[in-house]
Length: 325
Ligand code: FUB
Image (cartoon, rainbow, N blue to C red; front, side, top):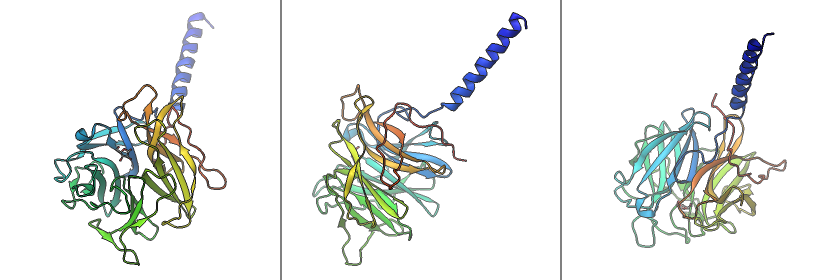
C-alpha cells in the first residue's frame, strides 16, 4: 500500500468513526434550549414532544408564554408568545406554570396569573386553541378559580385525566394543595358526591407544583418543596391507591446537585412512546444567583423493582435522542 493511499484510508476511517460516534452520543444537553424558562410542563401532541414553561422574569414582565416542540427530545423549535396578557384581559402579570391538555381536537392551556391574594382579581385561567402552538384565546373571560380555598393560592395547576375520562385539576401554592373535578368543556367545576367542590390533599412538606401520573394501577403524586428562589428547591413524591390520597411522602426524587445545578424543582414527567420515562424540571446554573435564572432541563427517570422512583441524576448531557417513530 503506498503512503498516500494508506493516509486516505486512515482519514476515511477516522471521519466515518467520528460521524458514527457523534450520532451515537447525540444528546439533548442541559439546559434543553436557551433562555430562562421555569415550571416546564411536558406533553406529547400531534406526534411531537412539547414543553410549555413559565417565562422566568420579574413578575411585571411575565406577560406571555412561549412554548417548544421537538421530534426527538434533542432538537427543539421555539414558538413565541403562544398566549399573552393582551388576549387575557384579566391577567396583568405573573403568568405562571402552564398545564396543557388535548381534548376532542382542541388544546386547553391552563395557567395562573397575577400572583393573586385574597380579594384580588387573578388565579387560574384557561385558554383554548386549535393547535398546540396556539394562538390561544381566553376561554372564559375571567379566572376559572379566583378564590383562596383551604389556604391554597390558585396557581400551579396540573390537569389529570383518570382512566374513566374524568378530568381533575390539582393545584395550589402557599403549602396547600387542592383537587377539583373539571366540567367536560373546562368551563367550570363539578361538585364531588358530598356536594363540595374543593378537596384538600396536601402531603407533608408540600409547597407547590403538584404533578400526577398513573403507573401499574397506582397514583404517583409529586410536588415541589422549599423556596423556588433558594438553592434547596426540590421534588418529592408519594404513591397511593386513590387519586385523593392519602399521599404519604416517600422522599425526594429530584434534588439540587452541588456539582451540576441548584434549586432543581417544579417538574413534569414524560412517558415517551419508546417506554422511557423522563423528568423535565428547571434548575439554576451553579454560576447564577438571581432567583429567576431558571433553565429547563431533562434527565431520565427510572423506577426501582418495588415501583418506587430512583433519585433522578442531574446531568449536563441531558438525554439521548428518543425520536417519535
Ligand atoms: O415560576 C413562578 C412560580 O415559581 C411557580 O408558580 C412556582 O411553582 C415556582 O416555580
